[in-house]
Length: 460
Image (cartoon, rainbow, N blue to C red):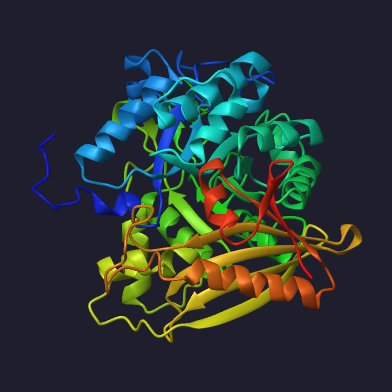
């Protein structure tokens, strides 16, 4: 890799959303339920290929979580990205299905790498991380809806997890049975509610073109995600179905019994989907990075999102989805000046039998600068801050902002004050924040205290 020039940030979009993401891959392990129809089995982590970039890195480092984190920190430093607001993303399969000792040692090793020091225990590692050079401000775990019990949720809280991604793919029990998914729609509904009631931010993976569906059915299921309060995810990853070498779907394709959508079909469907996504949801990613030599059939256009967004802008469609509205990407892509005059916009919706407040700082063009998710659970008299996020290019902790910067200008503090005011109006005097270990110091400055893995404040 060519080293960047002084003050040049290489690949700036990697930290344009306000954090520095580090993906860490688990060692290969087969799913207990068997293999889904579309999933390859290639002696690497389930659903990945040997030439997927994170897998190549993991294999080279013998799947060591410590070495993977150190490697990514080094790469980000070489590209001149700040590395003290880290979001850890645990990849490679259903992490919660691994042996308990593996789970605990894996997470501790990630913290040890960030802390640049080996701790005696996970708790010590998390405590050290509160003031470390590389702080884990968010931690994401991927799991299946049937691996999301109350015990497993308690364990994720112990790990310092703040976000959970569920492999949902479709919300149809008939499809689940035919593709050997191994769980039900009811599992999705229960997992989503348990997670939200524990303060987590919840993401779904969905798969347009999944076997035994069609574009009309895909769109109907997608609409249901946001019209039915049992679902309403905070985030989405949209992975159109592809035929991958080593999957059972390869055989069906070769027999003429399955045909993936064309690029044109997928693009048309994705535009319709993007128009449906509400303001409170962020589409994290579209398309998976499947190396062409492992792709039997399906579009090879990895950056299909770029084509979709170009078409959206060309036709001036109204898109409410978060990433499309984020200030960082708009500063990169917009050809006109962007107003910095902001207003606080508050909306509410019902989700998983709870009341959600969605707070945003936006300008007159609805460009998003910062957000907060507040969940009210009346029967428990608790308010959960499930996410606080200020967008724009990542700024180092303690750094003074310039005129062009978005972070460190009090937006987060203002959003927290607004959330506390809402909780009081709802006659709730206890507010809990799900916080990464590395973000605890921030909440301490706002008079929150650590209690049972949450940052907690009692309101007068």
